[in-house]
Length: 239
Image 1 (tube, rainbow, N blue to C red):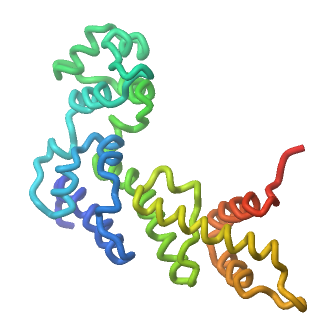
Image 2 (image 1 turned 90 degrees about the vertical axis):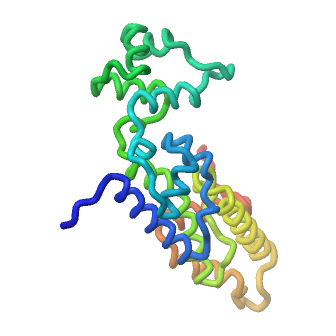
Image 3 (image 1 turned 180 degrees about the vertical axis):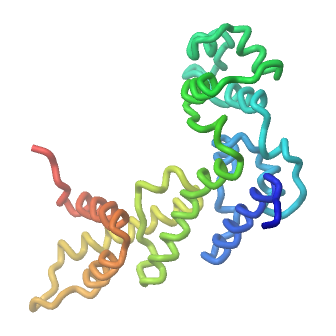
């Protein structure tokens, strides 16, 4: 098997994602690059060059530990908007302040436990341990899930159906399509519940919804049903 570098593996993975998005009728512009950088630490310009197949230096993709830690300090702020002090970080993970200083200047490498504790402190699980390929794929999966769901439902003639639960972590552009999808189905469900078809004939829109629901994957079906029940006043409440 031909050997590939880490950068080539990342570029190949992103090329696959780009191809799937295009097949589903979207471009990479549906990706929230700010959020992608926030979750992975990889700069937007670097990710765009990878998508374009342009050369990228290995340390731009697989950041050294000191750069990853600095990134978390700069982006995971306290509730008051200020950065955590070195002492606060040190106290939280049970090391000396000098250890944090040495980690940031690259004169010391962290052990596994310190890396794990730092990631937990900054609420960024896996930030130090996931490789760039895995980190990018994990961050981009919600975008792909949204795009696949939209395509799946369009293929069944229900063009505006989706899951509320998935919109907050994927693409904002796709989220707008998903929100519109929910609105469309809710309106149809409300009409169906308020205006029974005369003579016992089943409403064609209701039939379409029922047929579509049966074809959805189980987890999607449960989520959509929860939305519909709430919309038409049939939500289940605990006693």
